[in-house]
Image 1 (cartoon, rainbow, N blue to C red):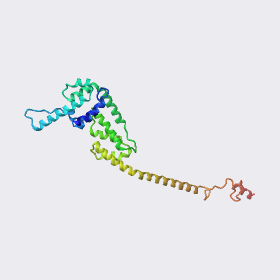
Image 2: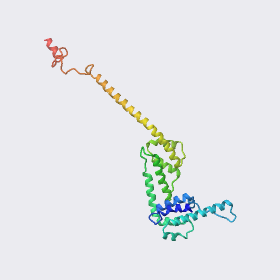
Image 3: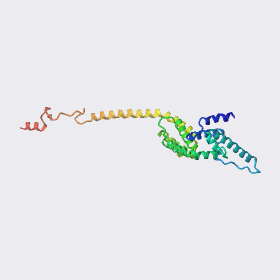
Image 4: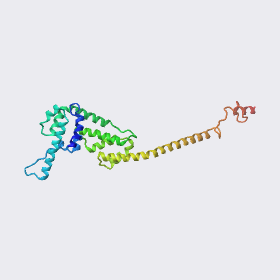
Length: 263
């Protein structure tokens, strides 16, 4: 009884009035999962023939008890007018389908909003991969709560597509080795990869710095060599224009000097 009271307090904080259908359904799923009753939403009540075996009887009794408890949670967490409308329904599944028809438009809009968030969410380089994956898991779970189930393998691939370039090698390994990971296992693998990437980052930065310094020194040597080898003498300084080749006096060219001596 104490467990029932603790869990209903979660639902009582957000009783279904109508506009809060999405939040209410999310809280209801939390409670049903915690109590182990959610299977009655996806599984039909097993048959109980007259000559039923012990296993068949146990399966039937388990489903009936879980369905009864789920109906109690639903009724206890809805407004009075909704309680009266659904009190006579035979199963929790029927109740939820009726409520979905009444407030389904909110559900549809919420699905679209969640999918948009999934498609637009990208992990920034250098940020926490743990926080990012947990955010993606939350969005995927919200889609599932709203009735839009995404294949588990595709969920993993969606998360991988949101990772930055530093996880490119992990993506290649995942595809080449055809890895089969759950979201929880993926989170562990990505955190291990993140640690390796962070350890390698200082080494890469140091190599880049060394390469930059070497390039700078090489550029200086090249400029010095060009200056030494410049035309006009060993020092690279040109003779003044118009200086006589023999007399070394400015303004007298070689041809003029030869003409004077010949005369």
